[in-house]
Length: 461
Ligand SMILES: Cc1cc2nc3c(=O)[nH]c(=O)nc-3n(C[C@H](O)[C@H](O)[C@H](O)COP(=O)(O)OP(=O)(O)OC[C@H]3O[C@@H](n4cnc5c(N)ncnc54)[C@H](O)[C@@H]3O)c2cc1C
Image (cartoon, rainbow, N blue to C red; front, side):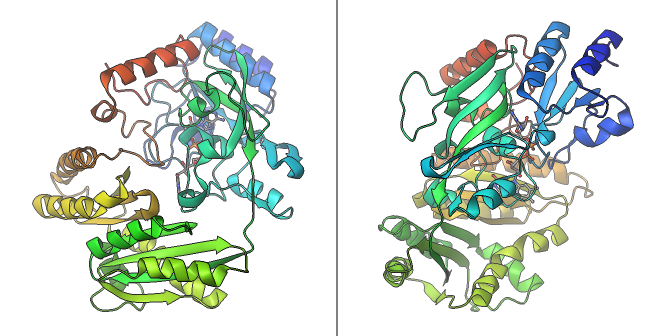
């Protein structure tokens, strides 16, 4: 339904020419994300100030219009897809650095800045911001915060929740809000910063963030460990994580993924390879040999077929090529694969992979697994062909059972991709009714009219 002309006139009052789209052809590209879902918004606005966001949220409340915050739309769960139409607030033009304080190890940024732009700005001063999604060059800090997105480094340095001091935001009711601290410690009041982080744009629009920075390590070493079985690799993961040198990346590739790498790239892997770990260690130059020795010793479990420590930059690149060959290979085989990002306790990884193999055989669907093993966060890829009759339904059924398996193993349904639309109907299997009710109550406190990212996160009643 087209927006009321008085609402358009008010939007045009807040947003100057070029900062408001209402033509369907202009709005179209803002209706999808990387989940490949799409719905057409009725308007798209591009604020450049916090005050414009306050005015916008208040206006949408007055008119009862759905409002969906959007970074760059790289999310994979449909969280920015405007199912109810309404207005998309694209934060991409709020990309300034507000303040950088190397002596206090923080940077204050607007939400539309890309993750990479933050890394580039602080690198020259010897710092980095730990969250490192592979999409860093394109995704925004606002999106990273709203999804609590991370990457390989989370195993040592944590996610946005552990690396953000405070936020400025506008609640769904249109109230401006500052939460958190500018210090590395603080315990005054409830922790609303970490409540907003991971809330997927359902409680408030983030308009500024104070990010906690970490000094860059002096050096890094990369190891590749190849195992005869997933259980052997899982034992090694547990041992590596239980010794004092925490790796800054501990990535896992299962036997099916190893097979795909063999077929689609020229990586040199031992014939009996059935699981592979990529391990990275960072720190001071002095002491790095000892750190690598400690990690190597932990990785040397029964079933180890090969352990290689890269000696040059070229070798590091060659080792990572194994991991990087995977995504293109999967895309070639199944362009419409389903990619889940479940998490289980590290000790449950063998049971998870065994269970996934059984489900793969039962449903006749190839399943390929890899991911951030140090956190037990596995990307489960169902390689379906949606053009085959009944395949989509089969995949859906299989997914249901995968989630049941994960919960039986005391895991969680998402490690970093979030809920959005994709997992909305499953979360009540993980969350207790009282917890879910409390979350709905919190949503109502922040957003009494339910305009912000409507229809997302919660199962429909
Ligand atoms: C090639 C590729 C690789 C990826 N690799 C990773 C990875 O390694 N790890 C990982 O975790 N994810 C990964 N992702 C997923 C995605 O990039 C991340 O989730 C990212 O954080 C999304 O950022 P975005 O700016 O695109 O946000 P969007 O997709 O635009 O939005 C994501 C969510 O944030 C909300 N939102 C955005 N901005 C704000 C704001 N200012 N205030 C309130 N809410 C807001 C939206 O409403 C939505 O709920 C990958 C995606 C791709 C395409």
